[in-house]
Image (cartoon, rainbow, N blue to C red; front, side, top):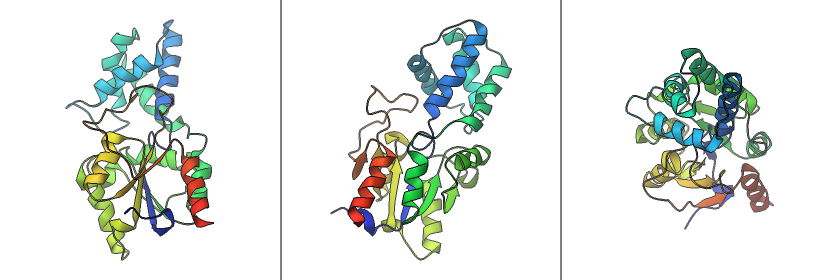
Length: 237
């Protein structure tokens, strides 16, 4: 039997894709580069090229890897394959926007839970994201802190160790994320209660995120962070 929302002490969050609109950020930057080059691109096609390029054996840490990714996908999109544009795409991460409901929902949830960020992004990028979100986090773990990326169980173990140092366990955690591949599937295997934020509920496919080998039915399911915050408010009323 799953725990009720008020029973958790912590909520852990995927950041890029769940709280920060990285797909919108990528498409906006690529569209700007295309405009300068006199080219028109299809945003969803660009995301499919990005996904294929990003998840390769040659991948570097995110978002530094966007330089390499851009140089790989630029010819497919008819864009100039110049490093300066790849660097522009990488640096655009510092201007990516939060989903419209993220900051308010996090502020509300922070009154009842300890919020922990778990992001595959490097610390320099996370610092931008955290400010964009209103700095709501009790603690944060990045690829620089863990030396790995989700869905590697070692990433989660770093967080479990931190929570254990506070006298608690993974049973006290609700893991919140949009990625079936990076978060929902592995969190289930590791015994976490999870919450799927289905950001692409009105769109087909997985966009810029790799498709999971198999779909994992989540413990909780909302199409927005506002939905989760509202459910918590109701459960606590």
